[in-house]
Image 1 (tube, chains in turn cyan, brown):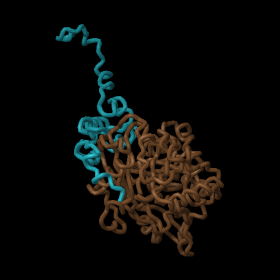
Image 2 (spheres, one colour):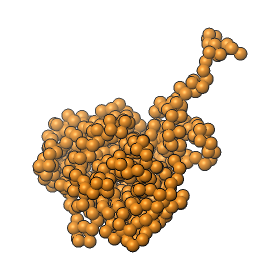
Image 3 (cartoon, one colour):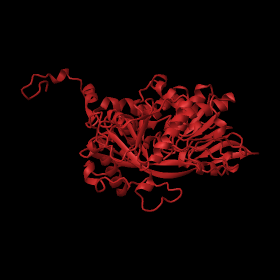
Image 4 (cartoon, each protein chain N blue to C red):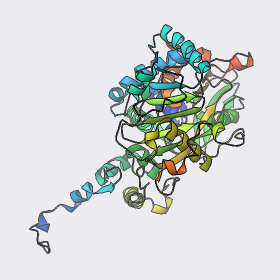
Length: 111
Length: 388
């Protein structure tokens, strides 16, 4: 199949899927692409927390819900280490972002 | 990086203190430098800290050191070839009592005499600097423009990349289990991965440095204390455009250029019981979240609708006078300590360079000898009135 079956006129043969992959935004909160992740894994940043501290993946409002599995799979692909053996990073409270007013001690006490 | 069995020096700890030490040792010409990190680089206190640095201390040594750190931080991105996210708009210190105002004035006098142009600010000036601030109950403010913050993780990693270029061998997930010693001198390091023969060891293990020293039979008073901190979702920059800090009540908050607001305080503010001595558990508690968001909303009411995305904790490395413990052990030749006293991110680049210079050149530009822990046996404590 050389033509896309929707109404657009993209010729699939002309697309470079390898490169397209690079442009995928893996962490949507912090807008980090697959390319950036692939650049740093071979430099030794091959655990989730190292990439988190370097690129901020998983530090945004979704706290890694979207990117963690994708990144762990990518680390596994590039290093040959099974996903289950890659340190998967710490999951921190709160479970979901929560307005600070809702958790604040009454009236915002100093003491 | 492959394992090596001998080294000119082995640095223990991959935080800011250890990484900077390794980097400067190699930069000053040492060939075989190995750095051991029990977890991953920046996973200890550095990667968990409040990201700030300042010269506005209450003791002469800290002011001199703090000033040297700012000079260094201003050039780090260029020197290391990686952006460290520097932001300088001062610490706005807030006093809630007349006594604190008097302390501010004393600190300013000392700071000014040492070339740090800090000054008192009026309520109007404080409001101009941080428009959302709640001025109720406040008695006075002081500020020094060149204090500020940077990204601690990027600063740590920038040193790591530079250290690697200088040939430093960095081994993560490597736990130190003991030392080889003969005739009062260190001869090697034993780890879970194997032994490394060396005549120089630098213990930069932060809160864990006392435990590491104990493996060499040394009793050095450094222990851990867990502090908690939170971060909000990123919001438009300018919500908290200066670093806000108060000693009593004890709190700090700041906004990174990226947009997140970071806020924290000491454990005595939200723990009903005192933290146990040597509390090494990295936990998070509801009491902290409740207390801290309360303080944040009161000090800066515009934060009420901003969401907290994450809370975490980290270890302060506590020493008897809350000051650095740096130097070579008198009873163990070649065994060095490089511990900051809970400000490893802030002092790391300078402390690392000082220790490296002392080891390689036998001298250094700053008065490093004053930080030797032998002061405790003599009953001497370094005094600083500007520590929360």
